[in-house]
Image 1 (spheres, rainbow, N blue to C red):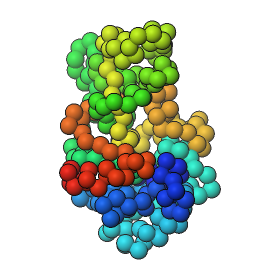
Image 2: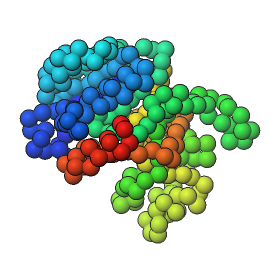
Image 3: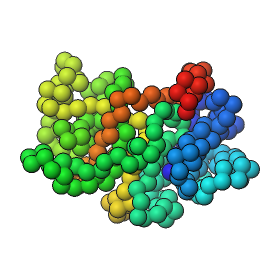
Image 4: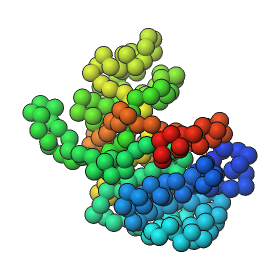
Length: 269
């Protein structure tokens, strides 16, 4: 699934007349770059959610014969549903037997799609060191400077989220939430690491097992997927997949557009 429904407010004034997905980088729309990476990796079905200037995205795909793929539209024209709500609405469009590979439309990277999609989903038991469950979702993460980080335990299971500027923690684990008073003074990340936890930046790229849709039954139409992950991390394993050599560019801001073309050339995205 390609998340392409956003308003693209950080790309104004370009997005006053077009959706973010059709903003051009290297002469081609962002959407095309992601679609072709999926196609080149051997994927044959893509779901694209649309909201802002939805008709332009639909027309673009039709004019290009869906790039020879089975591309299905999840239309959010009536209301922007955010990432979690958008995924929930699109549920009937997916194969229930296969994990869903999710990618933000405004992300460029050197990621090997097949390697990530095929990453080991087994979670190791902390006491005996053998696999004891399969992750319901995998999150592509790496180390880079940012304001917000995901928190993982030693088995790379998601246990929380931290905003280092606001000194705020979100978690469904009481022992992780209990760290919030400790991070009010001193180095936030070092304090977290002292508790044998790791912090990584999320890439906007993840896989999601259709078996998790049942946990969304009580959720509203509109909600962020990361809130869903954090609220259910104790019920189902959410695993971090660390890519140390990941080169990633978020093309969500005007200032990054100038960097994007050279990024494409350098990393052959």
